Length: 274
Image 1 (cartoon, rainbow, N blue to C red):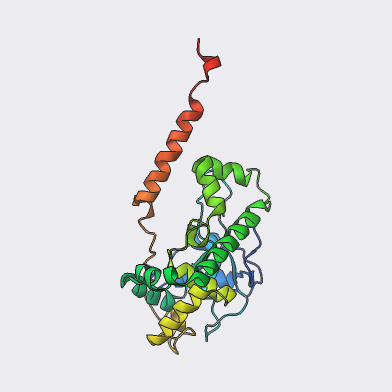
Image 2: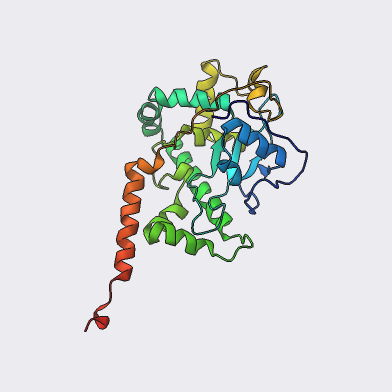
């Protein structure tokens, strides 16, 4: 927990605290500053996400002027040991994160899939178009050199295997399958709407939150949750929903598949057998 967190803000127009060298490519985004990175750490209580942050929405809804979401580098460290991010966006506003947490805890995702998505072809098409956009941005980001010796595509294949690498590059919002119309992560969909505004799922989330009395602009006293210079207020940032991601069945299946691919690559061909 980042209680009593004290950080020094700067007014630099470029981020020296972020280790990612890639420019942001997400629509309607601008590069992060040192002050933005400090805000991200304050909002989440974590340092690691700041190493992948590369962009923020060009316009913010926050009444205090803080970014509410960040665009992320899918391969921030560009090394074989570095972490890969399947999601391109991260919702960071503590108030919005907690509000969306509550939605998901109530079973909103399966409810909306049945009530809205399966009944609305236009909504399905919009979901798939958004998936396609995220795949395009991811591929464009990874085509850009980062002044590092390792090749991005080689690193991804080594970490995920051929099948995993292909799925990663084609993945949509929050790593979803590009053909899928089922909603997966409401946080990512809302973050997308904060950048692009014309995201139907994100707009649906905003309307639901507003109906529950949640202001998209924040509250008069929520500044302390995002202001790294505020050392007089302590709070517990929302816990990340992917904290136990390595224990999930999906991750275990990916590792098993990658191990099998490596074993197949090591097996000698018929011409090598005496």
